[in-house]
Length: 165
Image (cartoon, rainbow, N blue to C red):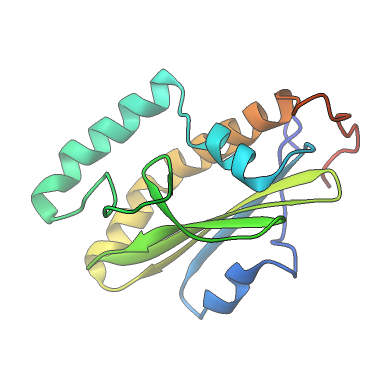
């Protein structure tokens, strides 16, 4: 458990992200006590604070020469820069594929908790190097994003005081 109520955890079994995972893929998951639909949580998660926007901008500048896009492909439905792939009352999955890697994020809301999981399937050395380079920043941004979710009440719904474990 981290001091802001965010905990590293296993991805709940009901997540549809599980069907993507194969050996060699990256998968992490964090959770926080919160009571809100996954779309609202995803909007908070992708509304990066200034320090994270600076890191994303720096990443975009450094990776552009290698053909990596920071904005994602065009899509009718996006949360932040991420095209929404699927959405149910319990889970929103967003992300896209590029020539170096495929990635998806899952925002799952169940039993008074919001889970944020990231799955990455690198295609080549470039994808693996990219993942290794950004991983410390990814962890920092993911934990901060869920801490912000945990602080935000949703439309007067009772905030769940249960902790993630």
